Length: 132
Image (cartoon, rainbow, N blue to C red):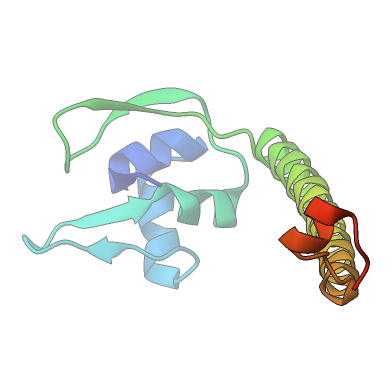
């Protein structure tokens, strides 16, 4: 997730800056202290404490680019469920392929053993149609 300033964070969750500062002081939400002494808030922390955050565009202090923050938790949870189902289906298909591969290897090994015990006629026996 992205880091935002305390002022940006208060706008994202829809509370006043003073209330947000009070929540930090009370320990309701954690802030990260940067090397320069300023504080930033991780947007995942905002979601943990306040739930869904507003769709707004925020310029982060760490990067010169603009980052759009608009997290729909329900949509992300649904996507996770879909991906987990796809993963399970993929694992089941992979296991089926491995099982079939094992069966084929067993068949090849048993056929190889049978072929090893069949005596092949020598070239002379084949030329003169003799049995040895």
